[in-house]
Length: 226
Image (cartoon, rainbow, N blue to C red):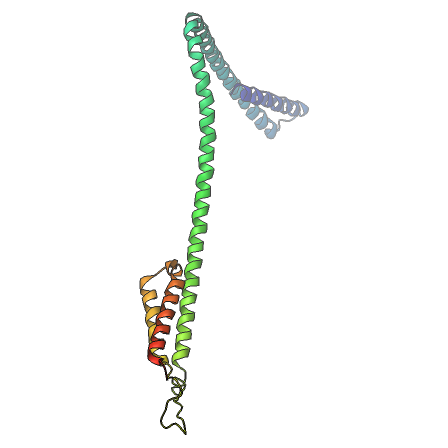
């Protein structure tokens, strides 16, 4: 405040000097513009002078308080010299541990940021896996619809009868494809009901192999020797 008041006071004094020069130049007539400028500059000088004096008094008061505080510090330092020497290691360690604590806080903040980024990537990966799962189910249903839409005459193969040996069956009956389609449809429906997320991908190969084994056993039982 004191420095600002001093600069304002110097600027106002320069303005007064310029206004006085303008007034002195026109001695024969009084210009109201120069008079107004001189009055304004004079007011500014007075205000800046008052502010400078107030700041100077405030500076003196604060300086006196500071000197008293420094004298008190010197007296306490002389009277409590042993205590200060004993407690000095504590404050030094406290400063060191505070610095270490700030470093650990910075590391924790960085790790929290990394965790949030990893969670974001994990959620994106889960969404992608769910989309892949839905695509797999859609493909399986599409294949099933194609199988169901095949011609009826292609489902079974005719029996071959011999001309010389009488009514002897030389061929083997093929299992009806409707049964296989129904079993596949039941498997897909059970998978869709049990699993809403990507967990069904874990046991998908095992379930498919088990269903294929069961179908082969049924084929062998139905076919048998001709």
